[in-house]
Image (cartoon, rainbow, N blue to C red; front, top):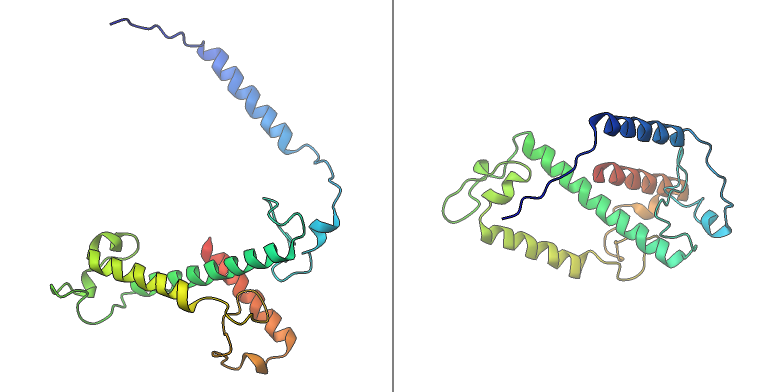
Length: 191
C-alpha cells in the first residue's frame, strides 16, 4: 500500500486568495451593468397579466425571449395550475396544523386520522394503499378533469362551459383584477 502525500497550500496564501476573491466579487456586484438592446420579442409580453411592479415582465431564463405567444400561453397555464395546487396544499397544511382532522379511520386496521402527523411526516404514516389511492386520484384529475377542453377565455380557464359561479357577470376590469390576484397568490404559495 503506497501512501500519497498531499501538498497543502500555506494558510496565509489561502486566506489572501479568499480575501481577494471576496473583494473581486464585491466590486463586480457594484459595477454598472451593460445595457442590452431590448428587442420587440422581449417587449411582447410587457403588458400581459402578471407583469407587475417592480419587476415588470420577468423571464430570467429567457423561455419566451423569442416572443412565441403559444409557448407563453402554455407556460402561463402551467404557472396557474401549479399555483392552484400550491394554494390548496398551503390551505390543507394550515388546516391540519390548526388541529382539524377528518373523523373516523384512515384504514380498515383502525388507524384514526388524528394519528397522522402533518406535512411530509404524513407520507410515512399513511398506509401504502392510501398513498396509492391519492396518487391514482391525482392522476385521474390530471387526465380527465383538469384540462382545457373547449378553449377558455384565457390560459388556465378550466370552466369548460360547466362551472361558472357568476364569472360571466363581472366586467372585464374586475375579471382582470381577480385573475391577477389568483396569479400572485399562486406565486406566493409556490414560494
